Length: 609
Image (cartoon, rainbow, N blue to C red; front, top):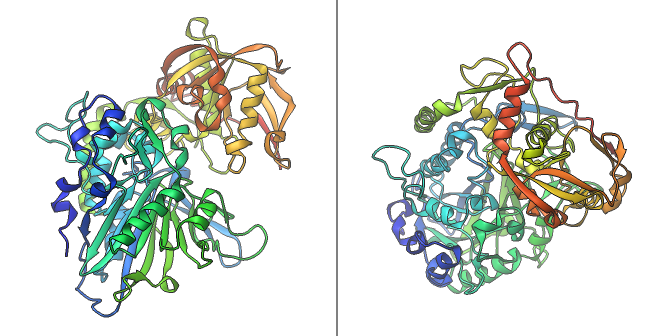
C-alpha cells in the first residue's frame, strides 16, 4: 500500500515554493509541471478487515460538496431538506447537518468497508459562518483533516480570498496579516490534496495545484481529477485571481483522463465544482424518472455527455442541489452523476466495483444514493471539542447583540424575492443614501451573497429574537465593500434583464431590491422579455432611460459579477463601509427588545408564472 497522505503531506504541497511571492502570476510560474504535480498516491483509510482479495472489489466512495465552513448545525431553511413521499407529496425534514453529525455518519458508513474513499467537490470553505470565517477558515480545514477527507476539487469560493490564501489553506502557516490565532499553534494546512486541473497560469499554462490524485490500496488504484467551473472568474473578486485562467471543464477532464490511462490508472472519478438542477427539490427525487418535466437540467448535463467514457463517475457541486442521476457518456453508456446538496446536510454513498483484471470499474455495478445527516446520532466528540475551542476564541465578537427580530426572516432558495433580501437591500440603501455617503436612490443585492436566514430562536444564551454579530456575519460573510455608482435608466433596465437572460437565463439570479423600487417579472416569457419594462418604477415614477440614477451595490456587483456585465459600465463610483457593517447598523437603528424588526413583506417584485 502506498504511504498514507496524512503522514507524508510534504511531498504534494506543490505551492510551498511560491506561497510567499507577491503576485499570483509569480506564484503560478514557480509551480512544477502537471506531470510532476500529479504523480501522487495515497493510502486508503483501511477501515474494517482487509477483504476483497478476489477479482471484483467493492470500493466505497463517500462524497459531499459545498460545506461552506458550516461546522455548527445550520439553522432555519439552511438546516432543512425536502423528502419526497411515495404518494408524490413532500414533507420537510428539520434539523439536519453539522460537522459533528457528518463525522459520525461518515465513520459509521465506513465500518465494514476496507476500501473506502472520502472525496469532495469544492466550496469546502468560503462564505462561512463566523466560527470559521473569522479565522479565515482554518477551523474548517482542521475539521476536514479530522474527517479523513482524502481529496477535493477546488470550488469558486476557495478563491474568495485569492490564490495566495488558497495556497496557505493547502500548505499551512499563519495568516500573513493576522498571524496565528492560537498561542503556540501554527496552522498545519490541509492533509488532503486540493485539485485544480483547469486553473492555470495564463502565460505558462501550468496548473496552480495538483490536477489529479491517485488513491491506492492493495493494488486497487483509482484516479481523481479535480476541476472547478469555467466561469469562476465571473463570480469571484478579480484581484485575487489575477494571472490565472479557468479552462474548459470537459477538455481538462478528458486531457487528464488520458494522462491517468497512460500511467495505468483506468478507474477514474471526476470531482467537478459545477452542477445541475433536478426537476424536484427533494433530496430523494429519482432524477432518472421518465416523462416530460422530469430529470435534470443545467450545465452538468452537457458536461457529463461530453466527458470521456474513461471517466467512471462524476461527483459534482456548486448548485447546492441533491441528486444521484445517470447521464449517458459520449458512448451512450449510463454513468452516475451525484451531488449532496450543501452545508453538510447530506453525503453520497457510491459503490464502485473494481475489476482487478481490467483495473477498471464495472460500470453496470455502480450504485449511488444520498443519505441525510440527521442529528439523532451521537455527535463526534473530537468535532465538538474543535468547535468549542474555536467558539471560545470567537465568543467576544460573535455573542455581541446587534438587533432584534419579531420572527424568522427567511432566505428561501426557491423564491425570487426574499424577505431577508429586502431587509439587506434596505440596509444598504440607508447606509449609502446620505449625500456625503454616496447619495444612493436605490440598492441592488446579489442573492448569492445572502448565505443564511435570520432565525428567531436563540442559538445560544442571547435569548429568542436577539440577533448576534455572529448570526449577522453568517448571513453576510464576505465583508464586501459597498459602492454607490451612476447608472442610466436604460442600464438599470438592462441590469434587470440580465437577471433572466444570457448566462442567467437557465438559472435566473434575481437581485434583491430596496423599498420604493418595483417591477414585474413575467416568467411565462423567455430571456430579457421576462422583464416588463413599462412596470419598472422608483417611488412610483417610471424609470427614465435617459436619466441618471445613483445606485448602491457591493463591489462584487459593481465589478460585473454574476453575469451583470452592464454594471461594469457605471460611472462616479464612491466606496463606502462594508455590507456587514451596514447590515448591523441598520438592525441596531431599527429594532429593540420592545420593538423588534418585523418580517419584510417581500412585495416589490411582482412575478407572473
